[in-house]
Length: 215
Image 1 (cartoon, rainbow, N blue to C red):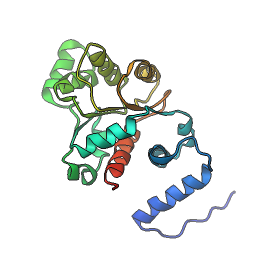
Image 2: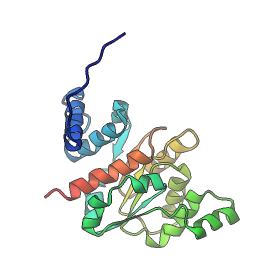
Image 3: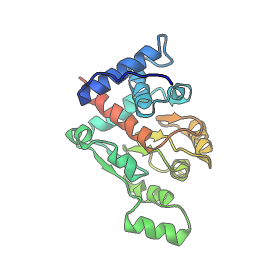
Image 4: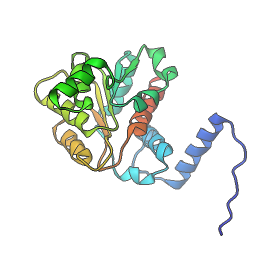
């Protein structure tokens, strides 16, 4: 049986700092990402302990600037799950005047989904459409939400500032992200393939908010 030794006690801030040191040491340079892209990619690894993500993360060339500027301008951040909404600390977004919303459980969204036979994630995108302009759309769970958003854009709908497109799973998750990559004319950050999830979408927005607060 392999013996393991516990790390010495660290405060919460030091635990995060030490985690990043370990990640840096296990991904030697030249790394697949650098600068602000590495800041975000490293936080996604920190969230999951999954170094394979480095093979699947894709940044639109203007994604980070678009996300940082949107936050600094006090954008609305829409999430497709309450988990993602809860994972974006208000201490990082409210100083900029940002609000984070998940419309999934709003009564009109629930009713529309029931009446139309769509998913609540699709109905939530429809409900958000009047306010999508200049927002960040953080999708970490529902492929149907990302597909609906892409349909909205294809039909001439107002674009958000940034799409964080990271739905997870086996049914249309990978395919929805391929639609994003093929059709999006606006900035995005995505994780190609089946991997993703609400914690990763939230972590991406957290990283952008940290960058926005950096002089």
